[in-house]
Image (cartoon, rainbow, N blue to C red; front, side, top):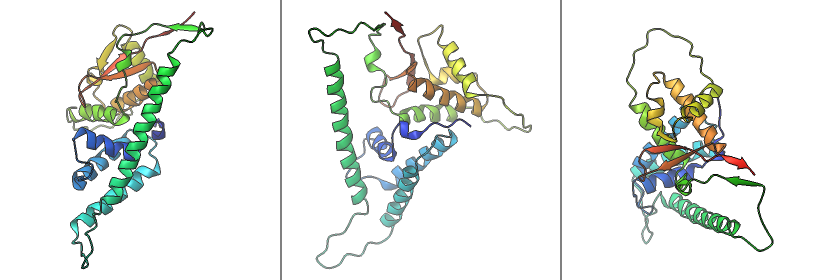
Length: 243
């Protein structure tokens, strides 16, 4: 199968923050049963896509299960002692990570703004880019987990088939990369559902999704999200042209 390192994207705390933001949860009062269920479900999809899952994802899943069990057990409290919330350590880690991430994003924004300033005696003449007025919206606030949600949406809407014959399906990552590039030759954007709607086999959809991730990494394809947590719009990126 075709493996993509998940470390090129986000980690388990990012996934938890994704759930909190998506469902508008109170980070100080996390519904641990729900978030654990969602985490394990997404973990299953990551494994189905054969992404190279870092050990920290497995560790975090185990920690969530442990917290869930502790929430179900009676918690004895000694006289004069406050009842300890089993979620406290998780909340602390999430808040620390959230602050770190926001600071990193702010520094990145400052870096981009600084690079766009023109200074006297300094010119860039190596290349020019055909700019898309909507390009600034591409991949903004879109994470790997948003893309997994789009993949999940498509897979859940596939018709159920009872297969009695086992046939080897010859589908490669290179084939599906070529398919996507050809698909965008005569169109500028599409949803993932529209792209794979004629595919009957789940494995072909899986490999197409991985091919899409590769093209996003290569910056040949971008992703735009019209509504928060709505359907993803896949966009053909502008082509860099030599001067």
